[in-house]
Image 1 (cartoon, rainbow, N blue to C red):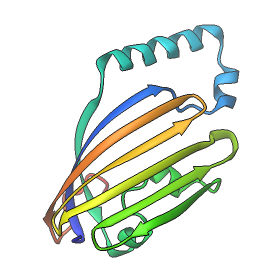
Image 2 (image 1 turned 180 degrees about the vertical axis):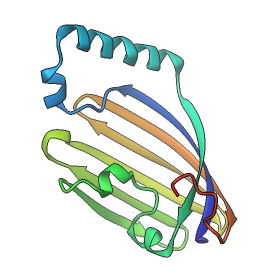
Image 3 (image 1 turned 90 degrees about the vertical axis):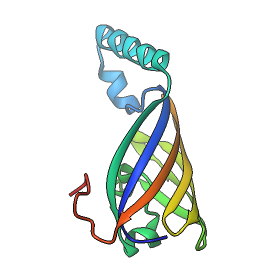
Length: 147
């Protein structure tokens, strides 16, 4: 897989909420009702698709480039790379504490300039299934959305 600027397309289906239980416990009944209505509306809309341009470095590829950034920065999360070859990157993250969740990812290289994959996440209050695809754009990361 090439390093540099990638255009990623994501399609996600989210059910429930990924708010920590402590946050949910502090909500008023009216806030909980509002959150439930928003979740129901989101579920009725079905899967959502979006694109972004992201920079992928050699360091990213070694550490699991496509795992959730929230998990990377959370000291209560432990990432385990299950398989890492030239054409496959598969790993999982287990998070404990107030924001307990489990995430699994599988990314397959369809060549040096194309990938496809999936990411799933489960928490006590929600589930997410995401399909992704990516195409390499350039060696330079100029124009990345995460600049």
